[in-house]
Image (cartoon, rainbow, N blue to C red; front, side):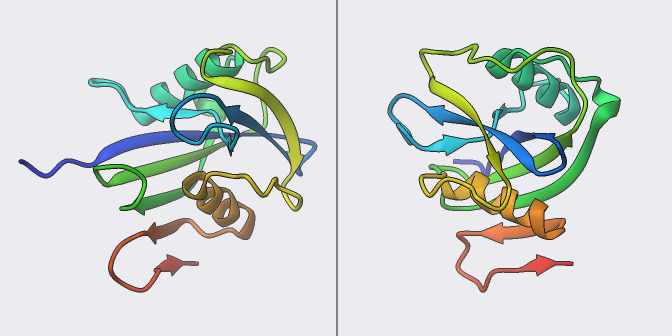
Length: 151
């Protein structure tokens, strides 16, 4: 089988400088656990286009791609069958009030203080949120090597 890495985008909708919007998953993977609005990059789609699309599909907000700020990238090897490259973007401006657009995939959405995140947070996005909060632009997770973070 050829090597393949999945590219995911994660959107940190941040309000008041300290609150982030999380979605509570419904379904097979991570049921009841919290996550960011996120998803896989589709073929012929840039990471910016994917981030804008996922925010609209999952929580119904419209984001200008120019309003997205890259805040973290993580290379993950323990979040599924294939490795993943997660690209995290911060958005502090958007149009619309976030709502649960996918009740078949999400129990609810809620705002959380970045310093008081829920315990039931899926580890992969949790690593990206913590890195964002700590100002770390790159990390790795789940590889057979010591964790690497760059300031």
